[in-house]
Each structure stands twice: as C-alpha cells, then as structure tokens.
Image 1 (spheres, helix red, strand yellow):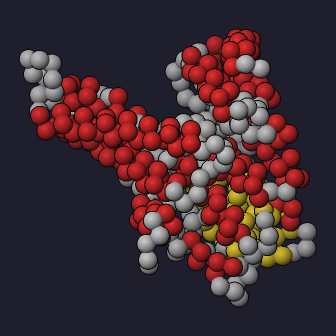
Image 2 (image 1 turned 30 degrees about the horizontal axis):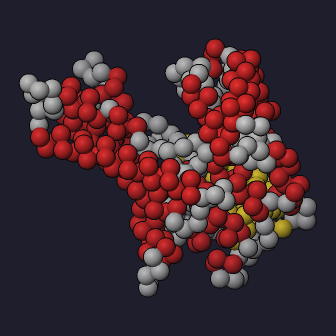
Image 3 (image 1 turned 135 degrees about the vertical axis):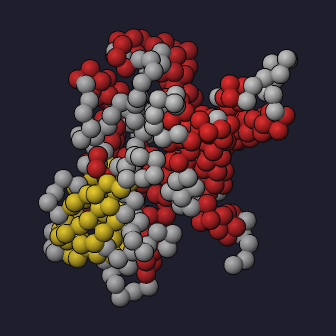
Length: 394
C-alpha cells in the first residue's frame, strides 16, 4: 500500500472511531484499571488498541500495529491534525513492553503485551530501595523460591505511579551468597494482592508521583520470571536504556523537554517588557531566550537525526545516556529560567496575588529538580558516557 493510500485509510478510520470527546486540548486518556475513565474515552482507547495503533511499530502478533516507520509518521501526523487525545504514555509502552519483546518468552509476550496495547494494565517499576539508588545492585528485597511461586519481602522507594499500577516489574535478590550483580532476578508481580502496600510520597511541588512500596510475603508467579534466574542484571540494564530513550525523546512519542522554548520569549516580554522595536527590553535576557531556543531546536533536530539513522528500529545502547543527560538538563534549566523571568511572581505558592500560569511556573520549577535524578542521575549518565561511549579509563 502506498503512503497516500495509507493516509486515506487512517483519515477514514479516525473519522469513524475518534469521538469528539477525545479531540482538542485536555489531559491524556487514562490507562490501567485504577484511574477513572469516561465510557466514551475508554471506547476510544480500546479502538486504538484493537487497531494496534497505540503501539504502532510493534509486531501485530502481540497487539501492535506492525507499521513501518514511514507509516507511523503518517499516523502520527493525522492524529495531530485532528488533535486526538491519546492514552497517556506509561511504563508499559516505554519500558516493560520493549523489554519483553527482547527477553520474554512467547507465552509471556502473548500474555502481557496485548493488555499494554489496550491500555488496560498500568505498570510501575520496582528498582530503587533505601540504600540502593545509584548503587542499584546493592538492593536487598528478597525473593525466595516456594515451588510454584516466589515469595517476596522487602521495600522499594521512588516507585513512580505505584498507587495507580496494576503490575510491577521488579529487581529482587534471589541469591545473597554471590557477587551482588550475579544474584539478582527480574520478575513481574500483581500489585493487587494483600502482600503489597503503597505509601505515596508528597514532594515539595505538592504532588505525589513517587511512592514507597512494601512487600510482606508478596507473590510472583514462576512464569513471570523474565530471563534467567540470578541473571536479571542484564535485563535491568536494557530496560533502563528503553527508559532513557523515552526520557531523551527517542521513543515512539517523539521529542520531550522542549515545551518552554515556545513560551520563554512571550514570558520575557510580559514580565520584563519590550523596547520601542518590540524586542525584549533586557539584552542579557534576550540573549538567554535565544540561546535556550537554539539549544532546544538543535536538540530536537539531533533527536530526529538519531531516529532516522536508527534503521534497526531498536533502542540504542549506552549512547542513549547522551540524550537523557542533555534533555534532563534542558528541562530543568528551562523551568528555572521561566520562573526567574517572572520575578517574585514566579515563586508564589497560592493566593489571589498570583495568576494560574505563575503558580504553575512555581510548581514546574520545583518539580524540574527531579529531571536530573530519576531514570539515572546526571552523574550516572556522565559515567556511562565516559566509560561506555568514549572508552575513557576508570
């Protein structure tokens, strides 16, 4: 089928299946079984999933669309043209799904990936623990072989979205008597069981995207062990590359971290003023706005080039840390610059003296501090780039 014919097919299908409630500005369509969703939006989510277009590049046999990169570009352009609201991105599509495609058994792929495509299952990540963050291999959560199941005891922390998750992919220690990297296994477990308890962590920005998660004789099925027993570290590292690919803007969803570039000039003109020629009044601020916009555009073009050159369609390896490092730093700096230009109005918490966008700028500034921490800190990314990309000595 030609791309023109495919475009006509996409337009016709969207006209028949994308309801008015799913078009135009608004939040992403919820995924998983915990968050509430309107029936019309659920029907749209399921229609998109049944067509395979929620994960358009994945194989059809697992619920994907089986599209070529060129067809996917057409699909995405047509979705944007009608301002279609899509299911919210999640760890199913960006992290555990791609990992299962590489490391899962055929049975595991068929059992888990179709529900990711439909958006019926929300996922969370059980990696970090108190005392095992950047040194992740020091984790202590233990899984003991009990015949048909593993029994899990321990604690995870900074578990993003655990309060909304149906399933978790977790690293657990299955052999405490070997070097720490060799006794770790990667397994999946149901979050809706008595042995799992969740405590959201309230952050300085006022939200609770992260949680503490506790396991007290929680259960993971034997057939939800991904890869080999005690050899989960390799699976874990590959999943992190998928995670950082999304954070670096190389996932199916496209570039990220570029939002502030389109509004900084407008903010500067509003809060700092303009000269007679309509330019930002302060030359130093003007230079900073231009520099940020150029950096953001350069980053976006580099993301696009990297995706076009990656003809294999697979997530790149250690070089993804370059994109994670730069994108996280750009997002943090953009949020801080935005608040700074608003002056004291950019640091308000509540009250009638602040506009909605000013309060949002404050919370975005506070939240942005996490960009350079989650998914691997900037320091970790620099180490990976130095050792694995540039080949520098220890």
